[in-house]
Image (cartoon, rainbow, N blue to C red; front, side, top):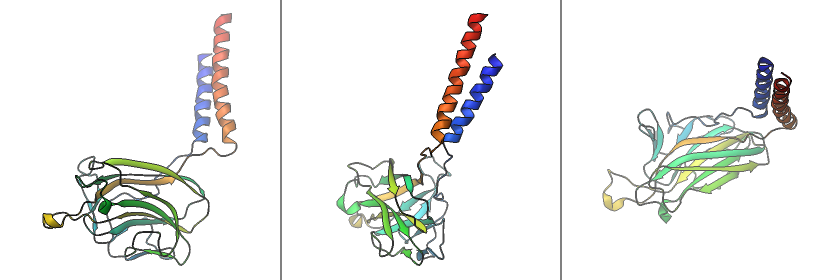
Length: 235
């Protein structure tokens, strides 16, 4: 009887895995940033590559120490962005960790925003663009990353709904100036120091029919326990 109950439990657990789809980050990690390409184009890419103005660079030694690469913002009000293939309409999750220069959090001249922009064929996003909304495309999501205090690594996460299909998406972090050494201290301007662990993916929402699998799996466990108790009672 114990073997029978164990088998029922395994079937139930398997059915629960069918309800919750696997997730993967749509964005690539900060292993490199390409400053040689001016634009992301729906028709020619480059896709799945971090692009930037010269005010950004990738450095080692993030929150997890050596081997943890993060995007450091040095100066100028410029975007860091990555183009990906357009996704289906639905609910999406966005998250990242960010840090401001000490004492700069909340400063008006250090404001930083994160965007997701939808593009269609023939449209582009340029590393020379000023802060979105862009000249081309549609803003699917944006949020200001300037809280009262963020001079240590600060997590940010949110969800947003996409109702239309686009050929490509662009994930953008747009930050105003932060001037760091070797510039003279008198020219330093408060602002974003950098970001890490950028993440974008769909939110797991059970599709029609998976609720039945959930109830089926829970019911199997209940039946197994009931049969086991009844068998013990008779014995």
